[in-house]
Length: 346
Image (spheres, rainbow, N blue to C red):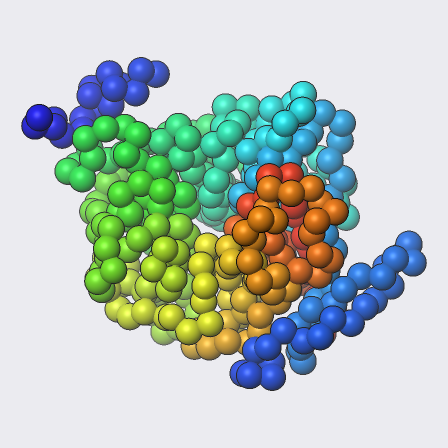
């Protein structure tokens, strides 16, 4: 049967509504304020104290899979999750201060579909660009959750015939305000919009060749070099792929990667949460600095209770974010949710 192109009308109708440094150092232990001993990971100038289950969730809140994390200008940490079993509060975003004290929550409308959470500083204001693959949408909100707009698959891209084919995972923003939406769980396209959310172009699409992607799970506009570059976590192809800002393939990065999920930078350092049980640090040339907390594999572990998780090792890192002091917050794709603070000690 011949399929009709996806239009807004059709959508609404169908929707129905270095080696020594690079290797993980043997664990050493440090005392926290309570006298408990915490593992330390990393090596040389990149060592971190591992604080698992960071942040104090109040009664009624239960994590599902923790998918997104961001730190705003005030130092508040925002966690996006799918909401766990037994929760009496359905908010998909929780906010903590720098000490892990709960501030507020919001996002009932994204319950079960929480995914990418991109923080954008625009003039004197900050906003979130978020993705909800369950509802096949992406949206822009204020930091307290007021939705400014929401969008679905672009009508101008002829790669879609059904609303459910579009399952966006993450967003990145260029210095000129253009933004990019990764259809990581859908058709593997990357869609580009201008600062006014006007559609510009689509590129990528599922495959292994240069310019094609397979689960472009995470995006980042890398400004560490002479020219900004769009970096794609081409997860199912187990690589990073670099593009010009108008969607032309530049090159691949394949060394020291398993299943890269996303990125964030602090100075010349880039953190890559790798779904296959470790967090990786690259320098500005995308060369290995260190692997942190390598747990080997999430198979048979990610759906277990917390007592099955080994201290100092990751299970399934999904997103990570530096704060202003170079500490790293890591959230994981585990059924009980987990937020880990890597507190920089050297």
